[in-house]
Amino acid sequence: MRRRFRKILQRALEFAVVGLMVALALVVVLGVVFRRLGAALVWYDEVASIILAWLTFYGAALAALHRAHIGFPKLVDGLAPRFRRPLVLLGEVFVLAFFSVTAWAGWRVFGILGGETLVSLPWVPQRLAHSVIPIGAILFIIAELVTLPEVWAGPVSLDDENGRDGVQEPGDGRSVDGGPGAPGEGATAGSGGAS
Image 1 (tube, rainbow, N blue to C red):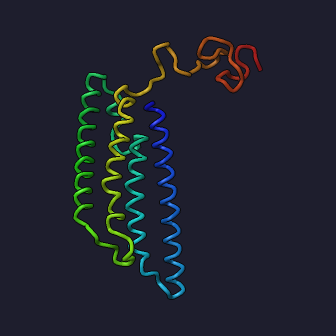
Image 2: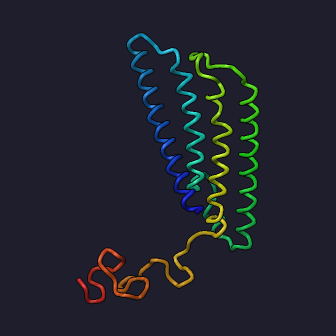
Image 3: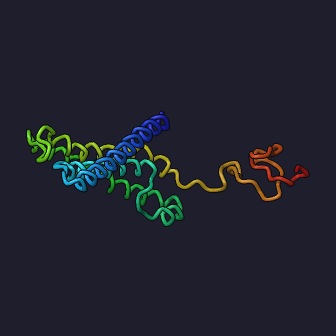
């Protein structure tokens, strides 16, 4: 259930990020072209900065889902579980607290904006532009919680409970489960008398 939810969330965030990147590229190209023609677009700067903010928040949530943010994973993963797990938990508490405050502050800003609109596009409400703050923060929190079980379990090593985890010894013509290897499935050509 959790893996299925993670996959759906990942696809949705990827779709949003790619869509926002395409939209930002189009807005920038339009802005440059119209400025070059001597008819600069009034809304270009404001809309481009809003799309960039959206791209940043949704991209951050996608990166959180992949655990691709800046950190010290090798340092933490190298520790014994009794040291690593408290550090992981402490880090998660800080991240979740920060994004909870961000979501709360974003919601407060959302309420304060009232009926204000964009300067260059008076028919677009400011609430739409700023909605990314609480939504992006909540998505980040969800991504952190969805991936927490893998982080808690620790890094995947070459040795699993059965002794090997898909790693074949050099020159060994057998697959991991001890059966005969098949070309393309971990068997090396020329090993074990097969060529």
